[in-house]
Image 1 (cartoon, rainbow, N blue to C red):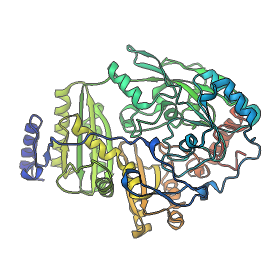
Image 2 (cartoon, rainbow, N blue to C red):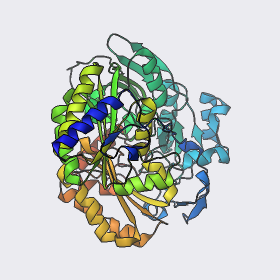
Image 3 (cartoon, rainbow, N blue to C red):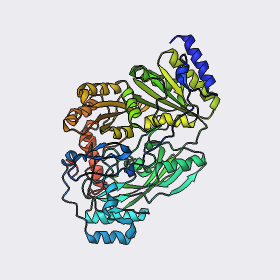
Image 4 (cartoon, rainbow, N blue to C red):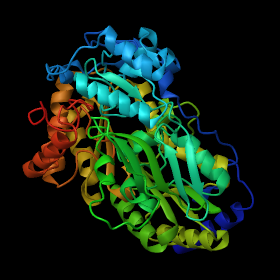
Length: 553
């Protein structure tokens, strides 16, 4: 782009910061335009998705959102798993014992109420549990697990049930232990920013609480309206702002967890420094409830900063996206809080299937980047961002872009990125893969998968470019075993060949338990199995998940 046009664009940008401009086509010489009409972000409540599975795992359809959604219970995957004969079957005496601990109303046997708890929100995994327990205290969780361990009753801990790998629902008839009733914020220290809360607190409620206190949660997810902090910690959820605040391994200061035998481990430290021996809390961050049930969490939260800017940018090719990331890290530095990426296929899908989605740019492009900055000095942050945009335009890294003028516009930009999962559900069947791959090679997998599948599927790529995290999604009209055989194990082999991870942030669950060797050495997995055997010798906690069935039986 010639420099004189770029400078004219920047001048227009500066004017637009004070005055919204309508009809971007009316200003063809301006590459950045601002819009004063946008839609609020609408987050779906996944727990309201009706369930229409048949027990054989065949295809079924529902009309949520007014469109047909292909669904399939992954019977082919679960069919490879045999119910562990060491586990007991639930009987009436068990139910009476639990009613004595929790009260009858917190011991749920009603089939209609059990439907939602037995099925994941994507309707891929379906269990057949006949009992849902709703403890309100750590002591009740302890009593439940101690009894289940003595009776060899398998247990699946459940938070908001927003997982994507079958980790939060039963495989067979495991007893479901829901943490939803343990939803209290215990304490908050405004000086240190340390929050202590129970595991059942919904992430969005924590975010709202902290916002009122002048702080923010370092974790932000598209499913924030349903997911719970205990589940977030147990899966080491990544989210949208890991590039700024890091993972939960760094932000969680302590946990309280209950072992399979009912032992309560009080590791609920509120100290940033504690160098006394093994830091055992890390065993429970990311172990997906297979080593113990997290009941309380202490987490370090940063202060809320007043200056937030969001830009939605278009790039001509993936190489430009990479270079833009490099420049953003150098030029935006400490104020860079998110760097998200989506390809043209993702954008088309969202525009066609997501209610309220609008293209903020006058034309379609092949690649898009969403950048968020967060700082404390509005003038300085804006100046730094404008200088970055100017330099990127002069170097032709940006083809077009929009800078949000207010919170509604920022929300509408985030809606495009966060709404991709919902749009995929509306479009039909979807195969989802959450991968960590070196940034320079990330999109090669998307292109190779397109070549491999041809016109049988719509292959889209998006994710957290700042974290080298690709969300590879294959959208098809219906689930097809022939297509699946073309995807797997190729996607895992490709990722392993490039020294990536087959699970960046979604966890292993049931879906990838037998594929863990693509990311971990045999010696490492064997040590993990040894830890499992030590902490849960009867293997009652979230069985069939995380570790290969050959090692845990």
